[in-house]
Length: 240
Image: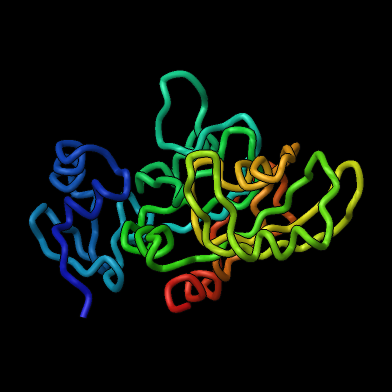
């Protein structure tokens, strides 16, 4: 059974003003629950089942949001930064009221799949090292990546600080002066993909995350665009 919430709290959480603003809305008789004018702000409602309207506008309540963004280069993966724009700056006001945050990080110069949500429990499940959630990146590398490197990555690599990575899956898409590869890792160390290639004397020129666990980047999303996850995608993440 859904938890009952105070009417003023529901409206405030949905961005209909401060608690004081909401109190005045209710006092002025413009708030209805199931067709009835409610003037007691402490009235308990089921925000998922009761029809709540304010000035005739239906309040579509939900607790969590889940957004897939194709992160562009040049933005940082945080909720706030005093020096530069963040991925949150791309979101419209209808999502900002939920106080969303990036689930994990992508470097400023890295593109690709970024999940943005306000579901802390899911974020923990996806980011906890113990969960071993796989992340796949497409990379363009300055150097010739050869079949021998597949085994090297599969054994794990020693990074510049002495850390030994877990086994990673390297798929060579194109080998040449600039090689194109997909790399799947199950960790999220600082600049990990770049440092893994640096450990074999190569430099990553371009990096894009294309999947996180079962979630794959929607190819129709241009850099900077985002959309809500559909129900199937949400369930894949929650019940993988």
